[in-house]
Image (cartoon, rainbow, N blue to C red):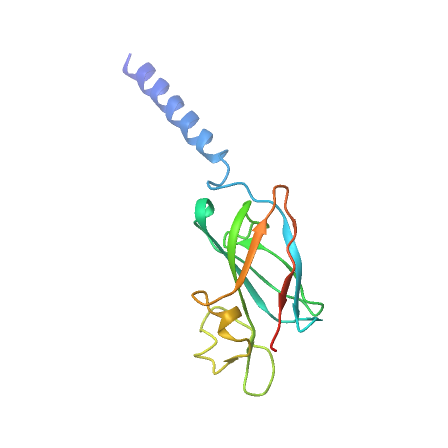
Length: 150
């Protein structure tokens, strides 16, 4: 009888354990978000883009880096591509090393610790001062960002 009870208990625990493995990552559904960042009408290369959720979508920050054509594709810190539908505050940063080369992060130190300088004004690069806002529409899509230095 003890063997039978232990067998049933073991099977129940295995079933519960496997059901947990099949669960999706928690959190809101992500939709694809990409776009182009322009500075004074020109594509902005090597810009770090961060979307900070506001209102009902508060939570994880979504980020991307622009390519040579100023294009980006958002992703979550988990590596999943996209962002949830909603309203966002956006920052754009472009850090440059003293020799003029773009700062490339390996995660070991901040741009400031590496001696890099922020090239964009706080109205774009500082989360508390940014004027950039974006709406991620249902189904996702393009969210282009325009900045001016004038």
